[in-house]
Image (cartoon, rainbow, N blue to C red; front, side, top):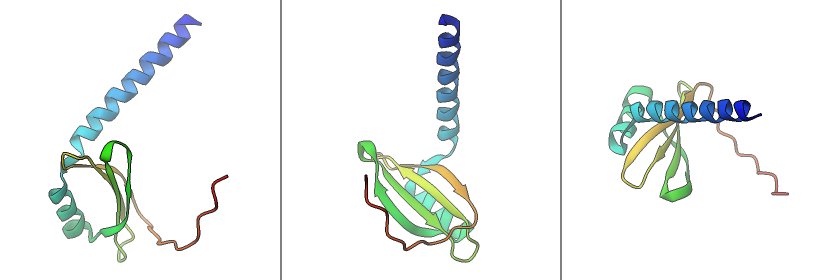
Length: 99
């Protein structure tokens, strides 16, 4: 049991370190990120939300190509790319009530 717990803990630690390394390479000042998304991919901001610790989550998408990107901007102005993909569709349906 102790060996399994140790392996799980080590695995989680490695995943966290790997995620931090990936994140560090995909972050830049917000102005630079927005400029690149707009000029290179034709994406504009489609949604916004407030996350923990004052972070701002934004969804950018292109109506022409369907590409999309999710970013998170920290209070210090650094913006990190969280996810991106294709086939973005704008939805206008009501969210179900919280249960």
